[in-house]
Length: 389
Ligand SMILES: Cc1ncc(COP(=O)(O)O)c(C=O)c1O
Image (cartoon, rainbow, N blue to C red; front, top):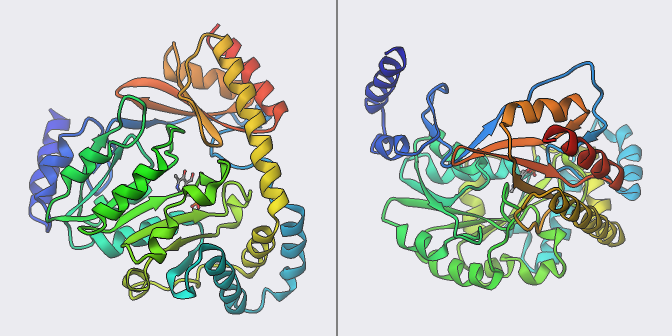
């Protein structure tokens, strides 16, 4: 009764605000947050909060898709020697990094926007494009930063279920575009599933869909694949398509805590975001120097890719031998359904010093584990044996 009243109150009070054609569509989803001020759907995906055990030190931190091998030695040196420049703004370094990125991606500096992590750019793009309502389309399950912000500023979400093989249903996404669509979000490879959608299909889709609405392609994990450049949608930007490609220094560069990411888009599209918020003011000089050094350090990137593959192969074989069936991963994490209940499972893992992430997908419990060092993956496998013995 209490909940019903609250739901009724939220519905009626929110209907009085702008952009509320969104509400019935949002409520139709299975996991809708009624606790936040803004009504947000998370589709078929719900994060299960982890227990906390202050008495057990974490020996394997496998919960946030961080790179255990970073930052590179060269980045560390650059960061250390830039600390004394901390009294200055990093404008010149930002300019230099933008030049480097532009050169690598085959575009002009006007095609690049930097941010403190790609989350910042996902959110700013969502605000810039969705603040007058309308709808955003993405796969479900997928990464929710952009979709959450879009919903928070008044857009509704059209959640398109993944196909049987866990790739984006590009035809269904295309069909669901309507005159209210402000943005499409494609996460490739996808988080939390670890799966990919055929890269050539994504490119054809982008060419087609971007005639009607901007397409945002999040490539946070692309660098873990061989020949990543060929797979990226970034060339479409140079060809003038209204495609926004996001990359980050948080994953293969191992700089998650240093916060640098960028988007590549047409100068007009970048301007539609920077008219509202500034590109480089959120960046520290230390992070910029670290990113510049890491960007040049190709052997470090290749080594991380190799080490990630080794951890992934080991983890895949180990969990299969325990009878689990993971979704084949193309990333620095892996997800698989567990057999017992989520909360006792998570408690057991945490009590053994192994941090993982738990999700309910269509109300069934799944464990997502990030790739760590071999030693960490061994701890993970041993803890898993105990947790679902
Ligand atoms: C798909 C995807 N995009 C973007 C991000 C954001 O990363 P950051 O803000 O650290 O660049 C993450 C982080 O886990 C992610 O998984």
